[in-house]
Length: 430
Ligand code: PGA
Ligand code: ZN
Image 1 (cartoon, rainbow, N blue to C red):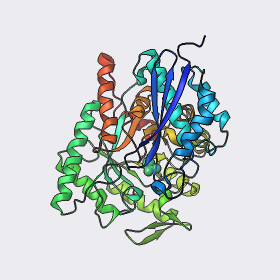
Image 2 (spheres, rainbow, N blue to C red; image 1 turned 90 degrees about the horizontal axis):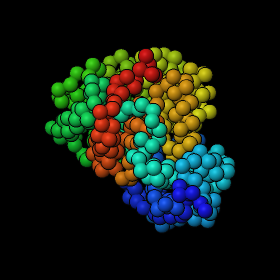
Image 3 (spheres, rainbow, N blue to C red; image 1 turned 120 degrees about the vertical axis):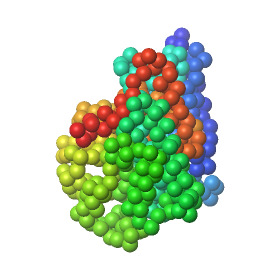
């Protein structure tokens, strides 16, 4: 007789993401009837070393269809999963890795493996009758994360209208998660009004941030500072600024091309430019300041500014424990972005998070630019006690669903509710 938490069936289907592109959804049903769902998100500025997405190619749906990935689940993954105990996530993920040992999950597709891995995790929480965050926390004390929230989108998420990809705020003065969202709402709405009054309002970018109708990258940061002040907050003291440069997107033939400003910069020039921004604006965090292959640039920058701001590796580290440990030993970066689908399984993402914590780094659970209504990652941020959460802007339901889930989790925590707040930044920059 199989145990009640054994996997009885694995069902997958094609669903649609926030960009109207197909993606993979998996439902795992257990012997006792419990069900868990997992959905693969999808990035637009992907790291070269992250788990692959298998798409069909060809003309239909721009080549983005996922029938090959679904076939892999039905023909290869599902037969191996049936009968496995869903509460043994490490064993499930090891099985997925055994089925596809390639470092970037090229055989099965990272979009197939992550949907299955997340579905089994959710099924295990359902089996225990617990919210996912609580199941993962397993009795340890955990906190709601400090959010970093995009106000202007840019880069690959806004037709490369400006070079920098994310212009975000970090609500440093908030004392609760709810207050952090309220402050964000004030600033987001004020920024929209400000754009409108300047005749620059032109809708929103991929992750819901205002479309960046700016002449220079600095104009975007200045408008962000102006929005913070207009909303009644003190930049720096109450609200920090966080940038995601997505440096690989600017890297061309050995130089960084800032298209908007018609500049070609080397790593020293770029370090200087970011240094000027750090001196001038209340920047508390920069993600992927340099390209994923520019180790010297990353090292130079961390050496110069790593004690002042959080320096996050996203494409640079691709949620890989080994890369995180190596980077930490070389003094490169002081925080890691954790995107489960970069790793391809929940356990590998957790290994990355643990490697970052062991190095004394900050950790940020992050969504992708292509998302869905799935709220699993808010639970991961709380359950794994990541400290920080990044899911895009403060509009569009695929974003808001994740922020709103944090409010529900706060209520589920009851009197034990705990919000880490600005302390989350101190692990990376003192
Ligand atoms: P994505 O980028 O488009 O690859 O999801 C998001 C990010 O760079 O943080
Ligand atoms: Zn990034």
